[in-house]
Image (tube, rainbow, N blue to C red; front, side, top):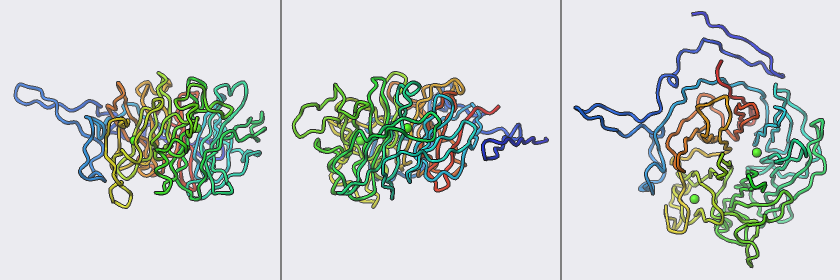
Length: 425
Ligand SMILES: [Ca+2]
Ligand SMILES: [Ca+2]
C-alpha cells in the first residue's frame, strides 16, 4: 500500500497529516460494551475490564459503592487527528478558545498570549499585574466573561506576591481590540491567608449559568495549612462563588455568619485544578487527592467534601493520612476516584457536533499519567472510562472545546504544546 503523507504549513510549524497510512486501530474494532460469555445455554454478564490494573497505592481501602473506581474501559469508535498548533510554550496552564477561533493561552511563568486559529503565536500581552512564579505558583487560569463578545473582558487567576508570602488572586481586564494588551487590569479578589510556600493554589475559574464566577482554591499542602480546608475563616481548600466584581455572590450559603468567609460555596478540598459545568448546569470538579485519592466530585452548595478528614488514599510518603476515613455521614463521597492517582488538571464536557459519539462526556487532563481521560457519566455515576493520547507522553494541563467543536489541549512541559483534536478525515 502506498502511504500518502501531506505536509501543510500552519503558522510557524509544519503539521503532518497522515492520510490513509495508519493501520486499523483497536479503537475502530472494539466496542465499549461489557463483555458477555456463553455458559451452557445461559448468557452471563462478567466483570468487564477496567483500564487500571496496577495495585492500588492505599492498601485495604474499599470503594463506598459499586463503580466508584475502576469502571469498565471503553473505546472511541471515532478516529481522530491531532494537529500541533504551537510548540515552545513554557508550562502553559490554560487554553481558552475565543469566539473568532483564536486561542488565549497562559504560561505559568507569567505570560498570556493570543495564538491564532492557524497557530501564529502572539507576543505576551502587556498590562498584567505582578505575578510570583516558582514551583506551582505563577499565572494560572484564564476565563472569558460570559459577555466576552460584547465586553472583551477576561478573568485570570495568579499567585500574587505579598508581604506575608503569597496567595491566589483573581484579576480582570479588557483584551485590547488588536489582541496585544490587557487594558484596565484590576485585581478583584485576594484569597487569605497568605502563606510562604509554592504549592496547592488551585485554581480554575469557571462561570456558571448563573453568571457567577466559581474559583477553586488549594490548601497550600503543608500540614500547617491543610486543616484550614475545614476552617470557615480561611479561603484555603475551598470552592468560592463571587460576582464578576469579586464580591461574595448573592445566595452564597454562609453569608453574614460571623468568622466565616462569605465567598465560600463548598469546603474540604485539597487542590482542585479541573472544573466544568455540564449541559444541565451541574458543577463538577476533579481534585488532586493524596496518593491514591484523586477524585471526581459533583459540587453542591454548602457541602463538605471531606479533606483532610474523609478521603481515599495515603500520604505521598506512604503513611496513612492521619485519622482519615474513606466515607462518613455529613461528608460528600466522591462520584469517582483514581488509585493510583492520575494528577487531574483541566476539564470539559463535550457538547460539539464534530464528535457525536462524545456528546455529554467529561474530558479530564492527566499530568502524572500523561493522557486525556474520557468519562461517560450517567445518572451522576461514571459508567465508562477511556484513556486517549497516551502515546504522546506529555503532561496534559488543560482541555477546552472551541466554537468549532474541536478540543484544544495544552501540555505542561517546559517545551509545552497546544494541540487541536479533530475527527480524522
Ligand atoms: Ca480557563
Ligand atoms: Ca473529598
